[in-house]
Each structure stands twice: as structure tokens, then as C-alpha cells.
Length: 114
Image (tube, rainbow, N blue to C red; front, top):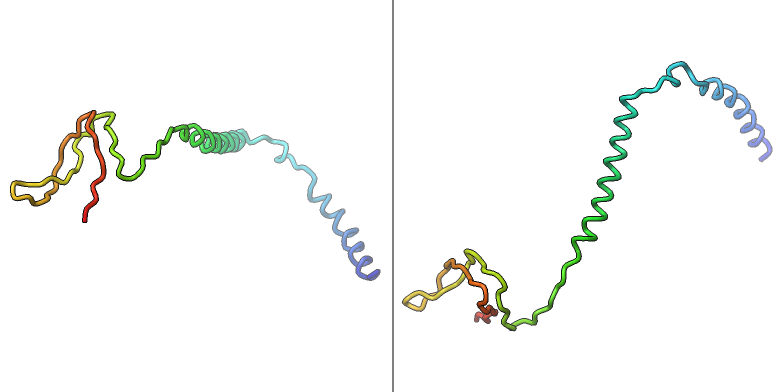
């Protein structure tokens, strides 16, 4: 174990001065790059704005009151439903597809189809 510590210490003693020389600042390090700085600031700002909207918008959009209506219970329409797809019977009593406006105030309920 002492041999491994001695080898590791010798490596660190030889590498640390070399790393210290390589890490000295150069003339280019002190020169600010304004364009790169501005691009980075914009990316960081955009990231935080997106995070804010992803967290804030769903929190406010979820403020909707939901009412449970049991199956088979009729409900009254609060506003007119334009161009609703409906099933109607023709003159022969056959069920055919149709479209119509369902006026405000009409009652709707599900019908069990056999």
C-alpha cells in the first residue's frame, strides 16, 4: 500500500507544476467576447422563460370547475351547438346520419342502443 501511495505522490508532484503552467491566463483569456456573452445570456434567459411558462400556465389553466353527471341523466344545453352530428329517422323509420343546430335550452340525454 505504501508503494502505491509513493507512486501516486510522485505522479502528482510531477503533474501539478505542469498543470499550473498550462492554466496560466493568456492575453486571449482576458479579452471579452461580447457576441458570445450576449448569445449565452439570451439562451439562459430563454431557458428560464420557457421553464416559467411550462410551470405557470398549466397551474392557471387547471382552474376549471368540473361537475360529474351520472350516466342517463338529462342535461340542458347552456349554449347553441352549431352543426352537431346527429342520428335521425327518415320516413321509412331507418336511422340515418344528419346534421343540425341544437338550440340553447334543449335537453339532451344518452339513449341505450341495442
